[in-house]
Length: 80
Image (cartoon, rainbow, N blue to C red; front, side, top):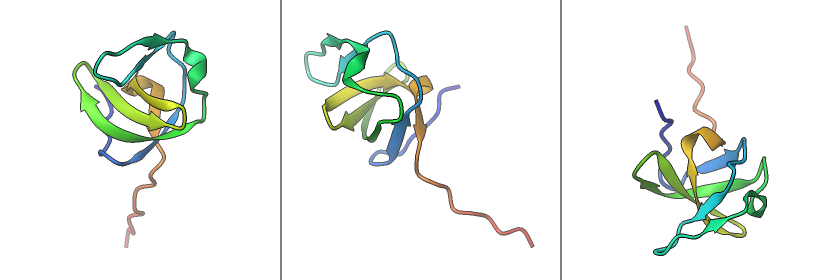
């Protein structure tokens, strides 16, 4: 089961894929060193096949949900 992220939410890279694909109308494969583990980005859209469009400082890239995690902290629930 793939993770779900809200559009506009912040995510962090937890692992690097063998390559990254740009999130352009004509996507290109780029080496994985254009992003770094721990780098944060903003989710811009959802793509077919479990991919997420994410805007980083060096551009927008498509990443599978297994390579990212949410940095938004959920509200704490108070058990009484």
